[in-house]
Length: 357
Image 1 (tube, rainbow, N blue to C red):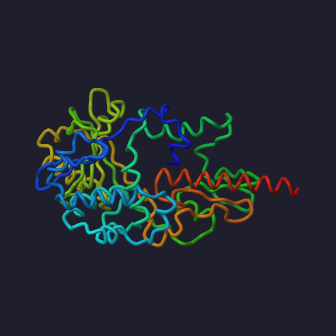
Image 2: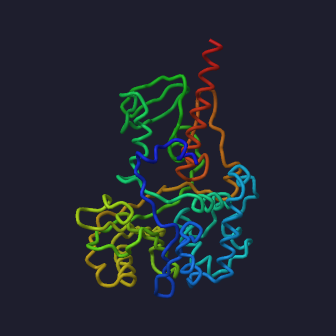
Image 3: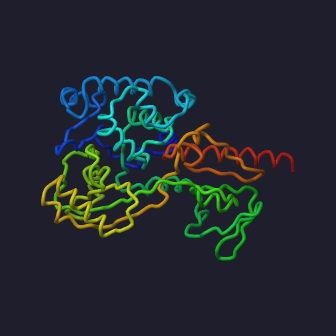
């Protein structure tokens, strides 16, 4: 909802994934598509072995549970871990392992599903009501669009900040900037360093591997989940099936997500290739590994009780404000909502300081 209010979706030229997943179970892929969003797949989803009829009815009930109230009411519900919530809702071990663990684990970067149930219900609500989408020319279009509303010359990038002292910002170049307000809009580790907080900021790690393939391993723009739980791959997708410009010329781009902390890149690459071969056959051996990214702090850890409350106050002290996805749900929506709150709080502070001058 925050992105919808702030961004121009038409300008981003969003391309959507199919609402659902292709799940690898017992050596085969099974399509599991949201029948409320894609009624034409109702029969196929009803017959899918990914879940029993009872489990599908429970998923329908969970969908209703997360969409029948507003976000504020959703966030007021008691918080527990996601795995405890799923068990409380009556989901079996089989559907948790086959669907929820790789799907929500990929969203939270937490296969143990220790993330707060408030985040779980928020995510399930968003996927039930909206589309998972990519801007036509990449995610960088989002910050570029936001920045386009600013006057020319006001942004300075690639300029590290060493310290904040009152209303003074000390840059790595030795320069000191002075402002009436300072907003720390960084990830949690950098924010704590700049604010002199020695408490460590726990984060989730992810490894992303990108391959160029001659042909796409799946034809639909759909998420592929590891429902077997074997091998390092948690999920993969083919972004170029969503928006063709993501791939190298004449190729398809395959994105692989690994949640392990294996630091041996050669061993991991070998294990991933072995798993890809078992999934898609010998043709995967010709895929070119373009890049591997190991992101040590990809998301903040949001185990209970960290989302109590969900929306954290923006003002730290007079003239100093903070925002980021660690101050709300760990999502684009949470980051934007937190940024808006910080901007509004700073505007109120500036008006008050002007009036009292």
